[in-house]
Length: 198
View (tube, helix red, strand yellow):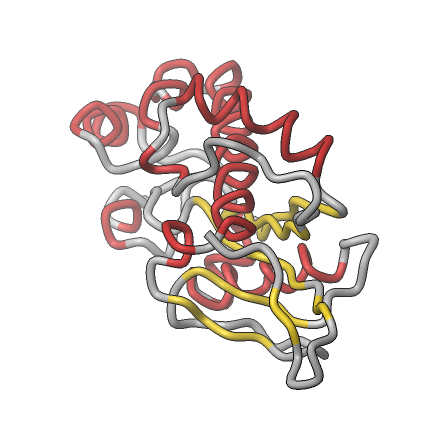
């Protein structure tokens, strides 16, 4: 995986890897992270968060936080998702993450084809979380933070099982919607949720 690139004059350029978690769930915010890695402190085990176990992700989070030159984790709310749609909300969360970095990167690399509008050059990389170390690190931070948020919501709404499915449209989640209706954290613009709005 790449850590650093150079411009045409051979000068080292710092870049931020960006990824999000939570586009598919029926409930909860979408979370994004931006990470600027330190090429002198590589982190062993970085990979697409979906290819790691929960324990592996949890182990990597403090390593990323300790060894990265900068990182930030932000979100877009359920209300924003319903207002501007999930794609735009994901891009909004990504731009917020980059803007919250303590270092202004020379370039931003985003997982996937869709890129937020930023003041610096930005490029989308298909399966970037499997190809780029900084994007992989961002995917891990975003996934762990979003899972943490949904576990907290489980304490508020235990009958929905958020701790297990994290808001994704599982059979358990659909059954809970059928029985209990929607909550304030459900995405009302999503068809499987909208059908239960009274």
